[in-house]
Image 1 (cartoon, helix red, strand yellow):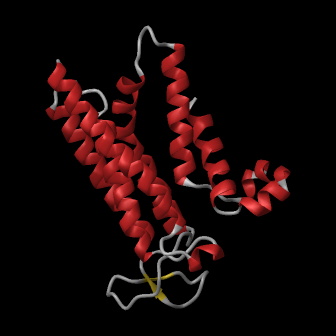
Image 2 (spheres, helix red, strand yellow):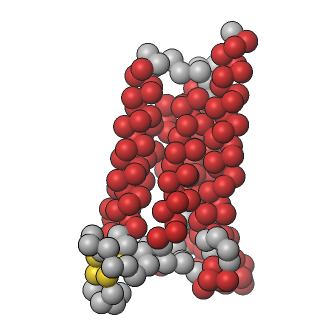
Length: 206
């Protein structure tokens, strides 16, 4: 379910968030996933819908919160692997910079640029460590929604900040105050705060 949710969500997210006019005019192109174009925010929605379906189907054994609190611990690992792949493929490059750790993506141009993909990859590995540490510290029984909320705040918070070093992915973003990736991250960050608050209130009632 998660594989389907991830791929379908990522593809639809890219088509609807970044190039809606083109794909709405050419809907058959949405199915041509081999032509590229995937969005992590769309994947996040797809994964959550897949988990919701799973938890409903097996509701006698699992609740939605129980599943997401555990699944999200591993999600940053997948995100890190994706960004390492983007780095080696010279995708999602950063703005030109004179920093000593700048990287020249020769398949793009000869300008030293922020290795934004690595910024994200390493931040996701750190987030994985934090989430796993919290889970173990809480003896594998976190308050419902707590790990999930922390995950949303940390991962999409990192994504929001790192977007400041990235080149825009679509031309229309050049006229925007914030990148599309930042705008799409804000609802997830707010939701994360809400889940953390919910988990503490739930714990007090118990």
